[in-house]
Image (cartoon, rainbow, N blue to C red; front, side):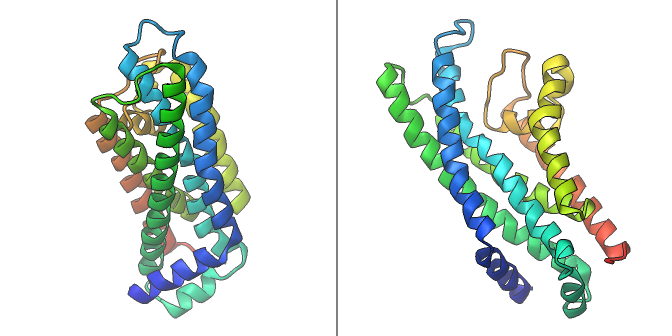
Length: 245
């Protein structure tokens, strides 16, 4: 198993796309923090601490990149037909999938940590310049939740890539659903949106929405983890039974 993990790490490091997405993610989060700043003074109904925490919660925006990294890590094998060799070298297919889940979970965690640190630095500078509080009592939990949910999206991406083996189709489905479809449904039906994967992930980071209340952080964490476990189990089951050609 250790050799499989080392092999997956080597393949991930050798792929330029991994480095590009990992570099863009923190900058993307910092830009979201900057975009959130003008909204701080517009919503007087939300406590100031929660509005400040929403700035730091923009570290979660790295989820798009960790999700795509996970998808590419899995679907790339099918696109380049290297999955056949992987399964021939390691006939127990479940080990191959497990190794990918572990490696991209680690990569996702690394990207999440860097994105959170960059967002914290950018957010603190922007808040200080705007005359707002830089820290809140719940800030450590917000940053930890944003980091954890972002890392889990990488695992989600690997499992999604195993279910939808076509690389382009998997990325399109993921981006359209998680950036537009889920958001639109949450806006139209807030009570439903809180139970969707995106709503659960937002809750982990303590995000506050005007359209409706999210689950508590612990509830969102359990629900999002359940979504990840469900899709991972489905991906492993399907990979074990489906023809690779």
